[in-house]
Amino acid sequence: MDIYQINQYISDLLSDAKHQLIADTMNKTLNRLTFEDVKKAAKNFDGAIKHTPTNHAITLSAITGADVYIKLENRQFTASFKERGALNKLVNLTPEQKKNGIIAASAGNHAQGVAYHGNRLGIPTTIAMPLGTPFVKISNTEALGAKVVQVGERFDETAEAARKIAEEKGLTVVHPFDDYHVMAGQGTIAIEYLEDVPDLDILLVPVGGGGLISGIATAAKAIKPDIKIFGVQSERFPSLYRALRNEEYISQGSTLAEGIAVKTIGDKTVEICRNIVDDVLLVSEEEIEKAVGMLLTIEKTVAEGAGACPLAAIIRYPEMFKNKKVGLIITGGNIDTRLLASILMRSLVRDGRITRLRIELPDIPGALSIISSIIGNKGGNIIDVSHHRLFTELPAKETYSNITLETRDAKHLEDILDELRSEGFEVSVNRNIDM
Image 1: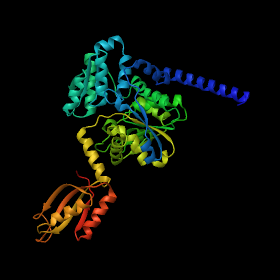
Image 2: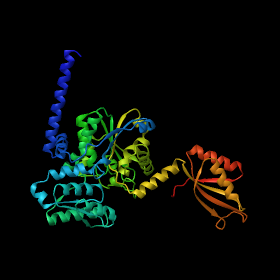
Image 3: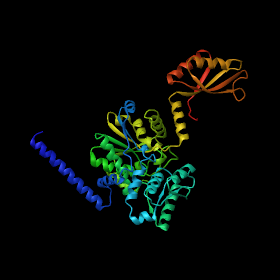
């Protein structure tokens, strides 16, 4: 590099710094989020928030064709990134606000983050939850030191009730996403990520109300202006996707990604996203479910549906990320154990490792034994058998058995099916998942 190039390089750096200073000053004037806010939030944490691990996902990289890195926010104390925004909001309260107390409307990760750090800082904390909230969520939140108030059938009713309680009792509302202090706290993830992997090409971020992606995009773009920031949402709750395209919002039932099932994007967050988020990608329920299973079986980490959405996006759009260095944020690991067990069993069904067979056979002694011997000799494992004589359309001297079978993989299953059919048995495979 000659002296001219060096001088030009220095000039560019100074120019970038000047532009950043001007942008930060303008944003401050307009009461908007700046990179300085995010850096200040990181200092405010003072060891109370973990710098969570960033792992190179070698196997996922080989499967997807992208160079995948995962940041494990499910390793925070409450198993969610939500602690970051909650804590930054709390440390920025005035002494009077801290004395009077706070209230938050949430039945999930935000509730636990606010409760944990509110109790830790000695701030009286109330959490408003919908009337139908499972008891385990209530007890977990109370165990963290918060007072729980159940009010409202739907969450929007709960949030409105929380606002009224705040007005009546002089409490400060800690909003889950549409708050600049909360956004700044969430944005500290980007600082840590780019310290660990400075040359990331893309960050994939789950989006509910937009607080996380607003903070991350603000910080990441300031550190590495050419990085791409993509939000990921469930097809059933595409609030930001539709807002950026000025489309009418239509939610569709429930979603496995309940942590980001937000009907309306935040007013503050959507303006930030319009300016600095590159795009929003939608994923299906099946893709989210598959991603949860892959993270558990391959990366040995538990992800709730929202936390698995970034991997689901790579599954759905592989060409978009091929040969790119992609960062995924596992935003949380709070998933119901029964649901997780169901997801794992369903993934075994999809992979051909657990299959239900319907086998027609003559109603004579030993027929079922022959089938069992064939399956056993081929290395299959029978999990369940139901034998039917009465409720069948077959002739009186014939019957059928439903057999749930475990095999090594789809090829192993085909070998067993071939052997059964070669012995004269009529076999059909039930590929519907209704376990």
